[in-house]
Image (cartoon, rainbow, N blue to C red; front, side, top):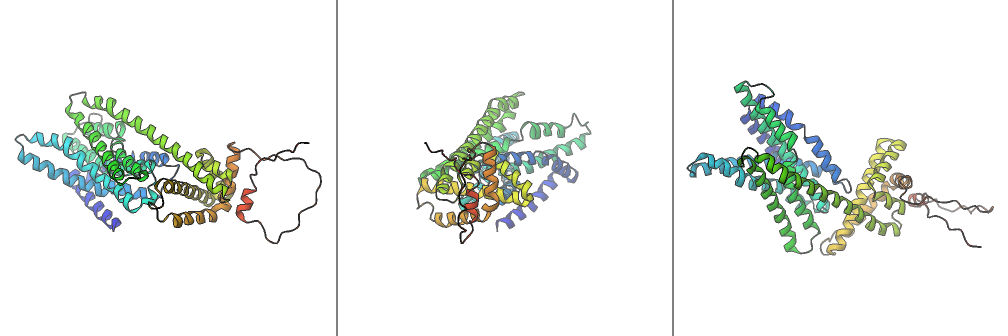
Amino acid sequence: MLLALLAASGAAILDLVREQTGTPGFFVGLGLALLPVPPLMAAFRWLGRAAPGPWGQVLFCFGWGACAAALIAILANSFATEWIAAAATDPSDADQLGSVAIAPVVEESAKAAALLLVFVFRRRHFTGPADGFVLAGFTATGFAFTENILYLGNAFGEDLDSGVGVLESMTAATFFVRIMLSPFAHPLFTVLTGLGFGAAVLACRRRTRIGLPLLGLTGAMATHAVWNSSSELGEYGFYLVYGLVMVPVFALLLWAALRAQRRQLHTLRGELAVYASAGWLDPAEVAALASLPARALARSLARRAGGRAAARTVAAYEADAAALALLRHRARRGGPERMPDFVDREAELLGRLAGRRATAGPALCRAALLEELVAPPRAVPRGPRALPAQTSRPLDSSQAIGSMVEPPLVRTSR
């Protein structure tokens, strides 16, 4: 149902934007608007690498921002601006009021709808502020992509009519402001909403779970309004708002994202240690899973030994282990009444880990040794001894993996 809605809204917004920009302007705008999309998507995926969510989920958010949210915003903003212009004595007041008061409310609400859908229907993949950061970033990147097509396409159409050169063109000026100076503008606004939803996931009280997303949405609308008002603050208003508001807020949110990533890794170490003590994981695996460099090294080792398929297996193992740790963390914070499916979900993740451990376990243990996260086993000289009797059954995969990294032997006193 949602995919059909996205497809319909995508076709509608495509036709609407092409109609407003003209066919040449549409293709020029499309090509230029694509440029910041891969770096932004890669940056948000990198920030969420401690516990990566499913690709389908983040692509849904991108599609919602580019199609559904953009369509809602164009239609609602146009209707509101026309209504204000009909009621106001000065038509220019309608554009100013629409830009500062109407557009931030409409656009941030439309983008927040994607986060609300994931929060309600895919709660198991919404584990905290880090997920809110990533999902909001993908949603806003999609929205900015469509909006940039519209702005750049219209600018190109004006340049065709006026016949100006490239350097003096409106297209170049629009590209400089929207693509080079402020590609992070829309993601910055919507990330505030995402952080509100992410914090709500960990809240225990119902009132808090409702209030935090609304607080984040209010912050997104306010920041968006300040940014849009920069054009009304004189010749240097844009640079004033850019330097005093956007850059500091960007730096603050980047710090918050990195801090959330570190906290996730700390949570992984603590929660997975419980499963290691129960025999599901080796302690060296836990050390590697709580280190991003070690996880990357484990994937590289697996790729050298078994090709891309082995590397993908290790990556899936790392993602499932992170999901298991965050699942247990949320269950401990919220209690069993908040997570009635905890036992089934835990069993599902443990089963997937067991199925991939024969490939992922050795790579992670080896990475932990190479990164010096665990002490290497020390051989202790011993006298000759008889070989052990042949057992009736071989070691299972977990025993074989666990034997790769043993705790250091202690020399007995004489």
